[in-house]
Image 1 (cartoon, helix red, strand yellow):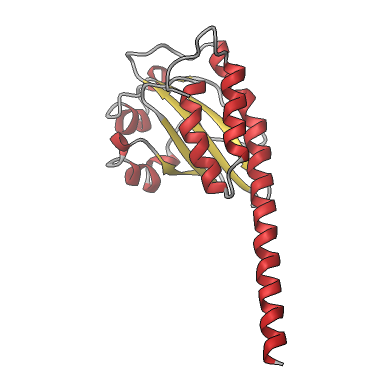
Image 2: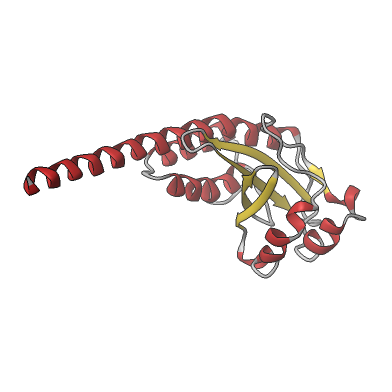
Length: 194
């Protein structure tokens, strides 16, 4: 994937297929999340990048944001995460596209989105069932870019199930392998000592 919008020769389903193929090669949930962050911007172009949020109860905590937001992430995680007018509520999995202009009077918008030039956001919930962890991937666009259309919403929604299933598979498979290796090493050590 080259970071450009899909061309007629490379439809979004092919980009989703390539993302799933890249995900299937990962050996950890962290590697899978890195792949999602790398490939999702090709699936749904976003001039302000992607952010990855981990939910702790109903409170979002930012795990990753593009470099341009580094200075505001601590403010988000300590204060603004509790003031966002939108938050992820399981079992809902695709959050509506948000035109932050409609919320321009909110503290969250004034103190976080405006300094980062974010005008539009679209979120999708991802779940790692093996660790019972909820993530939300947000795609952000500026005032210079267009709002999200039905095709963008369908594309990000289509990746949700595949990514959640692969996160769960990766987490449970490699977690089980690590447990068995530790168990065997422990038994081997006990045999040697006895």
